[in-house]
Length: 116
Ligand SMILES: Cc1cc2nc3c(=O)[nH]c(=O)nc-3n(C[C@H](O)[C@H](O)[C@H](O)COP(=O)(O)O)c2cc1C
Image 1 (cartoon, rainbow, N blue to C red):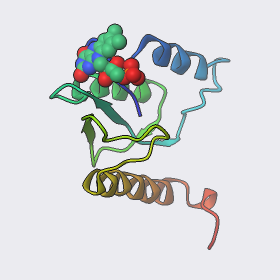
Image 2 (image 1 turned 60 degrees about the vertical axis):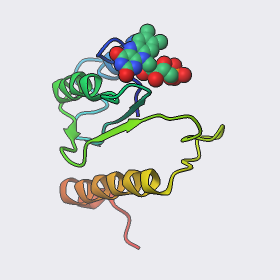
Image 3 (image 1 turned 30 degrees about the horizontal axis):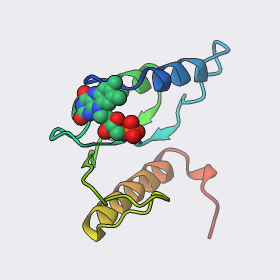
């Protein structure tokens, strides 16, 4: 989950992603199912920043979830101090993204999913 900075991603996140791809040939996101979600106070709610993040992740060959896209406009009280999501509709939507990510994991790396 990322905030949006100047219609892109925070520099520290880009730097962390760059280092996740070193040493050369050992990129951490290679073939990894990945979901992108963002929140900001702005009306476009990180949509522009997320497009940049998707481009960066695809460069590292991450398996980026296409849908649902998660653009969460942060309003006062939406998130608690401990990160709790206080709005049930938003919480349900975030759960749907996690469920879609789990489905992507099952489709792309079935051996990595423990049997239950
Ligand atoms: C340098 C900077 C640039 C930002 N640029 C944007 C932006 O382009 N679009 C947006 O919706 N919010 C922008 N924000 C707001 C952040 O996405 C975020 O909502 C805000 O910083 C609160 O989160 P934080 O407490 O983690 O910093 C910016 C914030 C900072 C500090």
